Image 1: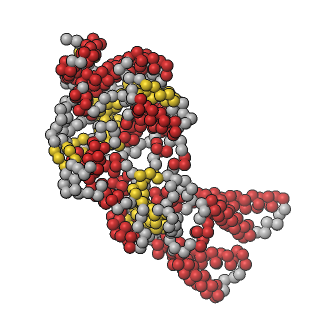
Image 2: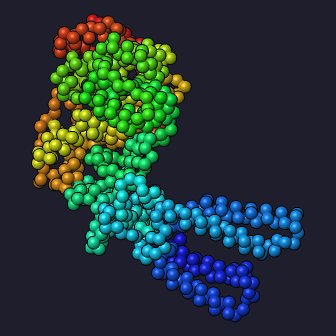
Image 3: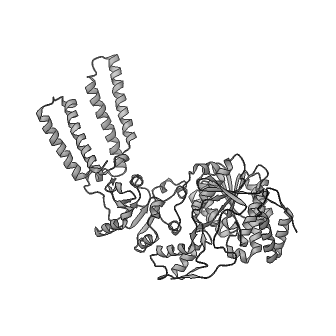
Length: 628
C-alpha cells in the first residue's frame, strides 16, 4: 500500500473510532450533526497525518503477534466475566455492549503499557513524542548511513542502543525503489542503491555528510564496486559491517557492535551462507584437535570450533609464536572453554603419538603444512617431510588413539601438480586415506583454492607494494586463481566434514569447495589499487615478471581421473574413476630417507613418480606402488 493509501486508511479509522465511541461510551443516536463531527474529526486526522507523516513507518514492522495476544487476553477476560456472572449473579454483567467496550479498552491499556515500558527502556519515549523532525541528530556521535533493505535496517535499528559502538543514523539506502520514503524508527529511506551518488550529494549539501557507512549484507556491498568503495575510503568514510556469528562467539554484547570491513572482504565474491547447525552437531561436546593451529586456516578452525561449543580444544603447532597468539586469543574470547596448547612438529612421529594418546581427541583437523609454492620448490626435502610424512604420522596416530574422524586440509594445487608443494599434498591425500582408513575412523579430505588474507596470499604483498607507491609485480597477466575468505573457507570445511560424519558410508572421493569463478590476479591487483582511491597504470604501475618454478597459469579442483558431483550447497565431491592405489610403506620409508639425506633431485623424482601413479586413468583396480 502506498503512502496516500495509508493516510486515507488512518483517516477512515479515526472517523470510525469517533462513531464507535459515540455509540459505546455515551450512547448518542445518529443525528445530522454526527456527519459534521465526523468530517471535522477526519479533517483533524488528515492534518496530523500530513504534519507528522505517521504512515511512513511500515506496518509490517509492528509486532502484531504481541498485540494479538493482548487482544486475546482481553477477549478471554470478558468471556470469563460473562460466564461467572451468568452462573453466580445473573443480570449484573451490564450487557454485551459494556463488556465489549471494556475488552477493547483493556486491550488498549495493555498495549499502551508495554509500548511505554519499551520506549522507556530504549530511552525513546520523549524523543518519539516530542520530536517533529524525521531523525534525531546528536552532533557528538559519528553519522551513520545504512545500506540495506528496510527489513534489515529496521532489525538493526531495533537493537538495544546501549550495545556496541554508538552512531547517529542519518538515513537508509535500500536496494528496492519501492521502499523510498519509508521511515524506520525515525530514520528515513533516502533512496535506492542505484541512486547512491545523488543521495550522498544531497546529504553533503545539507551538511550531513556520513562519517561511516554500514553494509548490512554482502550483496549490498558487492554492488558498489571497487572504484566507488576506494573513493569513499579516500574521503575518510569508514566502511563497516556487523560481526558475524563466529566472530561474536559467546559474547552476546557483540551482536550490535560494528567493525571495519577488511580488504579481503572487499575483494571477495559474495560468500556462501550455510546453516551452522550441522557444524555445531559435529563438534559440540566433543574433544577436537587441530594441527597447524596457529596458521591462517588452523587458527580460524579453532575460532569456529570453539564458537560451536566443543568439549575440549587441543591446539598443536610447531611455531611457538603462532601457538602463543592463538592460545591467548582463545583465552580472551572463550575463557571457560577447556583447551590445551602443545608445541609439536608433525614430522616427529613419536611425539605425535604421545600427544594424541594423551589428548584422546574425537575429531582431528590436520591443517599443518608447508604451503608456500616457491619456498617448497626451493626446499623439496622439507616439503616432503612435513606434507607427506607428517600426514602419515598424524593418520597413524589418529587411528591408534581411537579418533572417530580425521580431516585433511588439501589444496587445488594437488590437482595435476607442477610444483613440489602440490605434488606433496596430492600424495598426502592418498596417505591420509590409506593409513587412516580401513577401521572405525572416518577420513575426509577437503580440497580448496587460494584464501584471501592467508599466509602467502598475494593480498598483503600487493598492499605493501601499493603502500610503497608501486609497482605491483605480477608473474603473468593470464594467471588466475580461485579465491574465498578465510572464514568462508573454514565454514565450508567444517560443513563438508559434518556431512561426511553423518553419511551412511565413508567418503569415496575428495570433498571440494565451490569457489565460484576464478579471478585473474591482474584484475585483483587493479581492484586493490582502486580501493585505495588510485588509478592503475597511472598512480601505481603493474609489472609482469614471468612465471616462477612450479607455478601454473590456472588451477582446478578436479583431476583427469576424477569426476565431480554435487554434495551439498557450496560443496562438491571429486570421485575417482578407478580404485585408489596403495602406496607400499617401503616407498615412503625410501622417500623419508632421501629427504633426510637432503637429496633434492631424488626426492623430487620419487615424489612425481608417486603422483603419476596416483593420477592414472584406467579400469577399476588396486595398484601397489612399490619401491624401485
